[in-house]
Amino acid sequence: MEQQQTSSKTSTRYRIKQPIQYDVIIHNDDYTTMDFVVMILESIFNKTPNEATQIMLFVHEHGEAVAGTYIYDIAHSKADKAMALARAEGFPLQLSVNQKI
Image (cartoon, rainbow, N blue to C red):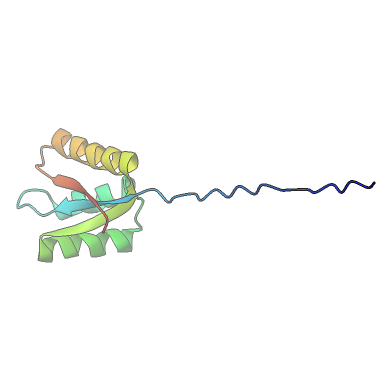
């Protein structure tokens, strides 16, 4: 008698979940200079001079704007670094981190 071999392949599919994204929000104040905000946006958030100027003007006119969107650790690191630089220069610049909706 013949025996038939059956092959059963088990297929495992992995679904890689995208990490949750967080917006770093820069807030307007009456003391931090526009030039300093542009410098922060260029040096920490890697914005071009044109992008940095546009974001700075939006913050000035509307009170806040998104400086960048990152995963949790990077978002907090960039916000903390920007505020530390601001404090070192005597500016009260505030940034916050909010989960992107």
